[in-house]
Length: 289
Image (cartoon, rainbow, N blue to C red; front, side, top):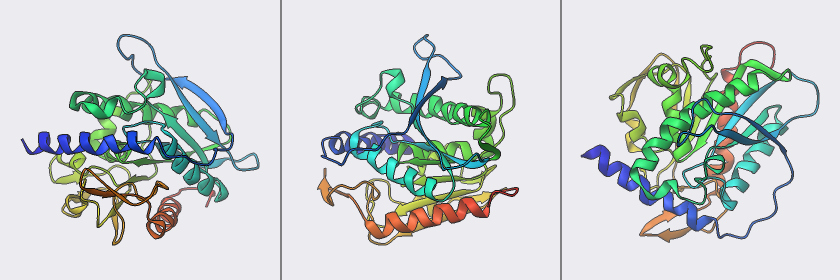
């Protein structure tokens, strides 16, 4: 019952992304569009995933970060925030793959947010998408294959939690196209639904180091459940920003929506980016630091 109620809150939360899509934002500069196959079919049809690829100058090999959107997909304010994250990461020497899980499946514009079964299904295929994106990046000669990271917002953050766990790696990444997938070097989750931990009990074994960013004023998915998690296997770090609400990295006006506070918090956005890069660099391997 608790898990079902949490998912109901998740559905209501994800409708925010639909609202955010109407915000007028500055145009996003061009990135290289790329495609690659998804591991499994969707509605009995093959899926070709789509993404925007950002590259630093030079030949590499570079570390890389996969970005995963929330349940509303690539709506304007969300895509703008991800683009800004990508620019920040590229300036610091990372390749960035901004992944669209929903457009290629015909699930854009908040369609997934509306129903609990859609959210549950999305968590499964999006976790596979994360490892498919890792495989794609690993095939590029400008990528340092041992230094591929993952970052997700909201629903994408919950997916990030899943794939950071040892059991998640076994379920979703253990056999990608016939080859055992490596684990992500480290994972970052922005204001995730930490009920994603509860699927596997309170004591969690991590296969990838995990950093979670939450807002103390987030009354949609309060970060308290993230504080109560006990982990083993790899580093777990939690940052809670005192003045931040949900979606604190989206450049929208702070507002009440359905009685809950949402909107941009610049200090939390800037601090979380710095902490994310520092965490990724801390866990890099080889000579790419």
